[in-house]
Image (cartoon, rainbow, N blue to C red; front, top):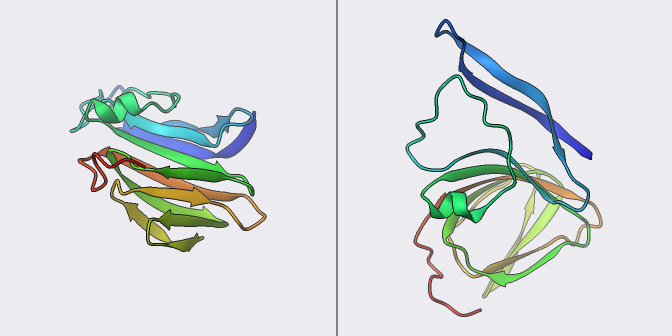
Length: 151
């Protein structure tokens, strides 16, 4: 397993006071670029405050049922994703490296510290930097701007 950053989750102790429920490194398997930090099957979140839901493999089923997912992704130096559109709004924060966000009319390079909101348009990704890039991504359900388009 490749070690990633620590995952810290808050909640309530048995006495009802706020506490840290989990504090452990995230792990991802070889070849996986995404690790789910936390997800909820629906919004608003109504999970019991004293339960730590361990990271689970990402599934669009969570988003399609009206939920939310928070992941960290590591894009290898040779990573490329073809044009596609999603039925999510994605909130992306670049932590390390560079990643090219491609659209049908151009592209922009995201660097550490940059943030982007992808509103379900037709887009693709590419890492040209020669080094890994790391980003956090929060996905929420949406009616995408690119809905019904053929790529």
